Image (cartoon, rainbow, N blue to C red):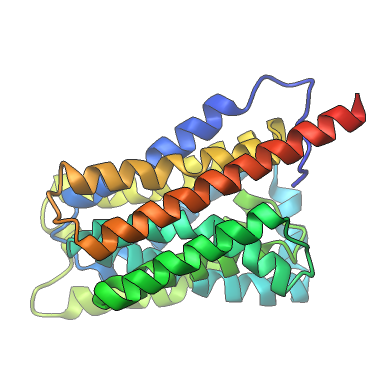
Length: 302
C-alpha cells in the first residue's frame, strides 16, 4: 500500500472518517449482541466475514491478488500468524466491552500508534525523531501509572495495542492488500471458528445464532461491520497522505472513550484519568511531529 496519495482520485478523507466512525461506535453494536458469549461471537464473526469479503473481492476484481497470495507459502505462513493475532485482538476487545472495560479498550487503541512507532524502531530499524521519543516516553509513563493504580485492566490495553501493532508489522512483510489479506485470514480461521460455533451449539445452552431471528441478523451483521470499514480504510489509504490517515486514527478511541463516559457510565479511576492525560499529550506530540514532517516534505518537494 503506497504511502503517497493518488492525486487523480477524489479525497480519501470521507472514507477514512467513515471507517473510524464505524470502529468508534462498535461498542454500541456489541451492546446489541451482549447475550452472545465473546468466544462464540468471534467464531460467528469470522464465519460471516469470509463470504462478505469474497463478494467484495469479486466486485473489486481482486481475485488474482487473492489467488497469488494463496499460492505463496511464505505469505500464507505470515497470514496465519497475523490471523491468530487479529483473532486474539477481536476476542479481547469484545470481552472488554461486554464486561464494562470500555476505557481499557479505548486506551489500547490510543497506545497502538505509539506501539507501531516503537516496533518500527526496534524491528525495522526505523529512526525516531526527538518529538516521537518524547511521545513514547510520555506513553510509557502513562502505562506505568496505570500499572500502579489500575493493574487489573492494564493487560487489556496492552494486549489490544501490541496484538494489533504486531499484526500490522506482520502485514507489512507480505505484499497482500488489506481486503485479500483479511479474506485469507478469515479462511485460515474458518475451521476453528466453525468448531467453536459447533461446540456452543452442542452445549446445553445451545447456539446463540438460533435464539431469535433478530439476534441471528445481528450476528450476521458482524461480518459487515468487520469487512466494510476495512474496505473504506483501504480506499482512504490509497487516496490520502499516510501521515494524515494516521492522525484520523485517533478518532475511533476518542469515540470509545466518550461512550464509556456517557452510554456505559463506567467510573473513570484516578490512575486511568492520569494515564489518559499522558497518552493524550503523547498523541498530540505524535500528531504534531507527523504534521511537521509532512510540511517539511512538501517544502522540499516545492
